Structures are given as structure tokens and as C-alpha cells.
Image 1 (tube, helix red, strand yellow):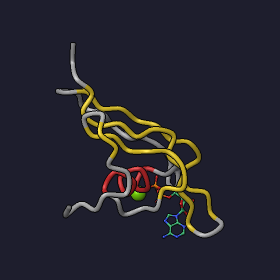
Image 2 (cartoon, helix red, strand yellow):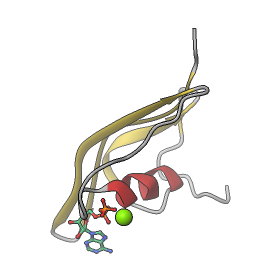
Image 3 (cartoon, protein in one colour):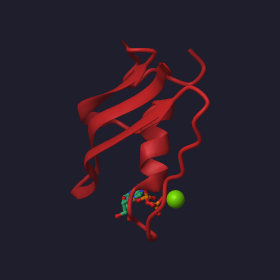
Image 4 (spheres, helix red, strand yellow):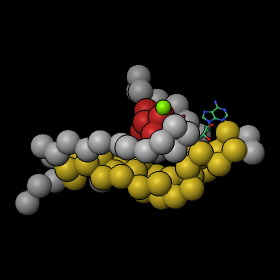
Length: 76
Ligand SMILES: Nc1ncnc2c1ncn2[C@@H]1O[C@H](COP(=O)(O)OP(=O)(O)O)[C@@H](O)[C@H]1O
Ligand SMILES: [Mg+2]
């Protein structure tokens, strides 16, 4: 069975009064390629920023190999 490498669970991110993510989830398995698709403003960049720890997550979490890394900085 393939192991899940990276998971974003129910992420909520807002920029001031703008809700950019309202419960976004994505999961990436070992050897898998995942594409984020959506129109301009859908939240693609914000999901990546959430993974990188560049966006402030008000709800939800990011897991790396089941370990919570929510809001960890990319250089940590
Ligand atoms: N720095 C920011 N300040 C305020 N609103 C932002 C900022 N960055 C993105 N947004 C808003 O958050 C939403 C998601 O944007 P974004 O993640 O950039 O989408 P995408 O990458 O899919 O085009 C949009 O409504 C956008 O206008
Ligand atoms: Mg973008």
C-alpha cells in the first residue's frame, strides 16, 4: 500500500476579510502527481502557501508523513 506523504486537511485561510480557503483538503501519495486546477482566485496559490507555512491557517492542518507541520516555516 502506498504511503500518504502530504496532506492538507480542512484548511481555512483568510486575508483580512477575504476568505481564500474555506475547508480545502488535498492529499498526495508516494509516487503520485497531483495538479491543482481552478480559475483565477480559486485559492491554488494559497494552498501552496499553506503547505509552505507562508499563509496563516485559522482552522485545519498540514501533515507530512502523518506528522502535523501546520505553519512550520519552509526553512525549518
Ligand atoms: N495578499 C492577499 N491579500 C488579499 N487577498 C488575497 C491575497 N492573496 C490572495 N487573495 C485572495 O484570496 C483568494 C485566493 O487567491 P489565490 O490563492 O491567489 O488564488 P489562485 O492562485 O487560485 O489564483 C482570491 O480571492 C484572492 O483575491
Ligand atoms: Mg496563483
